[in-house]
Length: 298
Image (cartoon, rainbow, N blue to C red; front, side, top):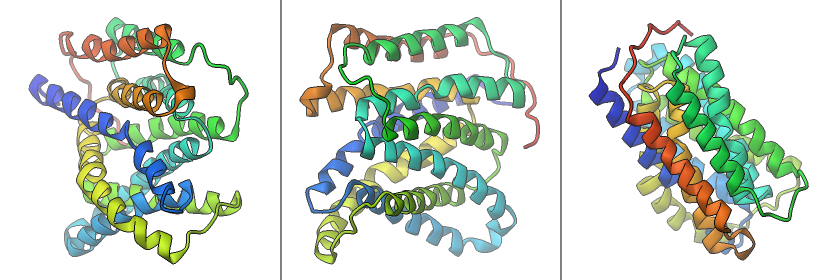
């Protein structure tokens, strides 16, 4: 059982860490300028922290070998969800991918009720309704209404991530390096496999060598710590709440993409939607904390 202070810290950590991932698309597009495909950029960004974290796990093998199997499974599910999200960014629009992924709170809340016996209050439903209405306003005004392969990847990624969030919440004792390392590895491997099937271009050695330094700095300084923070917070928050707080990523991704790509710039209604997404954080965190029930074992 968590006290209010710990839950509040976890909520803040989740919001900040997710916001960092809202800029995930930036290095992907930047690295494409070095002559590598978006698929290769995703694989590179995720392979580097996977090597670091799984190397750390091997050094602590005596301590973690009893839990590694379960941690690896949870990390694999999380990595699959994130790989699908990454593929959505590569093969679709940043804005549409982000919005479709952030149907996650619906799936997370349903799973949390059925699996973790989560007590869902009117504040949660109000936050979900506000956030989803905000997302609908964000996607309004566009001209592209066709469903592409990137949209399919993004939609499925939200469901898979909701399952992963529930698994993390139901297994709070699993070691973070093992889970996060497996997530990064699963993301890199899955995107490479899908890219191969879809005919993605293999980068040359010179392009790879040029992109490696910047990819290393970005991933180790920003993305690796933020994933650890997300996993730490996810252990302390019910899936529905965590999914809502991660909408900060949607806000950052949509606004930054709108500033970068002229075709994805926000209109007045979309800015209103962005404000509504931010408000879900306050709706969720300003209420009186509810008594938590015991978790069912996964």
